[in-house]
Length: 263
Image 1 (cartoon, rainbow, N blue to C red):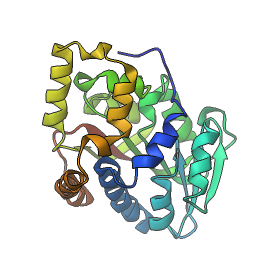
Image 2 (image 1 turned 90 degrees about the horizontal axis):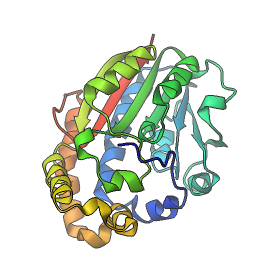
Image 3 (image 1 turned 60 degrees about the vertical axis):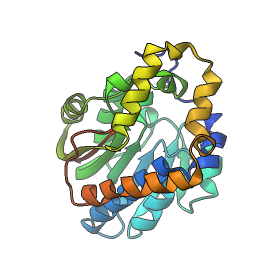
Image 4 (image 1 turned 180 degrees about the vertical axis):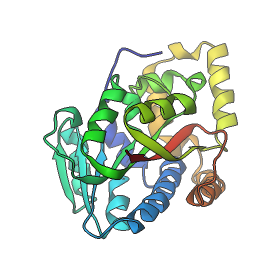
């Protein structure tokens, strides 16, 4: 499954910027994360620190900055290309660097990794490093793609190293020194459609299709799905945001969400 192309291609940032505000996937994820982070923020004292590792273009960081207003947000990314876009979206501090080699001490009450771990070969090393710089009983919030069975050429293009099972991710988080507070699948509505597409691709040996086709599928969704259909899918998926805000557990989905506390 690992594709031999670790990390992330910074050339994708320009493509992401073109779709993040209108694509249902990003809009729903932002809604879900905003609600959860607001709940977390309400439990903390004003002035707390929150770090987003792998903030990229600042798509989620702008919501972090908004809903965690009593706190101080910081965005971190390996690539300067992404931070250039993030600077146009947020007023908080940004830093370019590798979290494994950062100089941070135990100073963050909340650390977020949104669709980051799947790009990293040594994901447990990252989790343990994050544990070191999180305050006691501080929060860790993670999203990752789910189900290894959904692996496809899209994952190769996106430079994913893996997709996660719920039990596998739970074990890694716990081994890294956290207790799970809440964990669920999401994008449940998408699961049967993505599963069908992946099965059809496998049957037709579509994994050999030109890389550019998969880039187009991922980043230029507006040309593949009509804007009106985007809105319909968004409204359907928004129901999941309502359930997750109430900490309901969804049994299926193309992504996983974890809220954990540092021990």
